[in-house]
Length: 91
Image 1: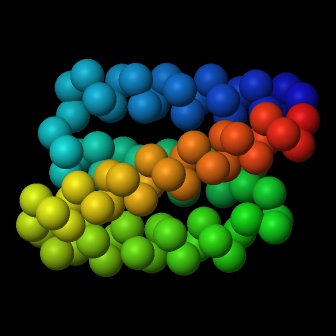
Image 2 (image 1 turned 120 degrees about the horizontal axis):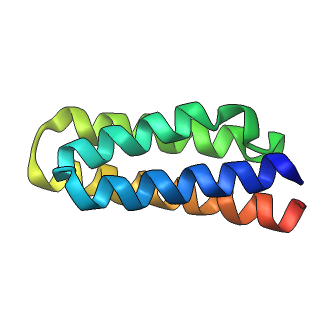
């Protein structure tokens, strides 16, 4: 329970802080780092899905285009939301 609460607070804080001062490219990097930091909290049944999404996000980020960075931000936001929702449901 405490780990779920801490994960939720950490994810919320990083998402709120990152959107207030980060450029989109930085937001992608921040989201990727948030996912990396939360790897211990990811439910085992989601590990493969998260890994695939992170690889896709890194590939999008590597393109260096606005569309690629937007795709990276969208992908990482979806992963963070899915992990947060899974932890809420798993209690």
